[in-house]
Length: 167
Image (cartoon, one colour):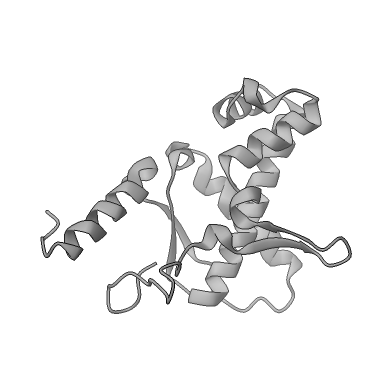
């Protein structure tokens, strides 16, 4: 995450902006918590699909689940819809903490043509459940480098530390 000064937000322990570690699900009775990255990721799609179909998740990938979704598989549709809803919930939290103008989505899944529509739809479903929702609807866009966005960002940071310009 970048601040208004254009610099990366690092935090005291250099974990600032590590949103995947934020908690998206908490059960106070069972004393359990699940981080954002375990609920809204490609591996989460596979885990849910495997559980709902009784298959072993090691035998397929999120790409396979999306293919099953496109073929009309009900369990795949549930897994993909759950992914989008969890992603929208995490984005909602980021939206309220940082209030950005737009949300950039990266990672390998960002290459999917239906990603932005899926996230927008889930975000609107979530927004409709929250009566006190007051922020504008953020713009959702893909990171320019999609699946390589994190690597490009790391390289940019490294070059800044070395006093070199990114070209």
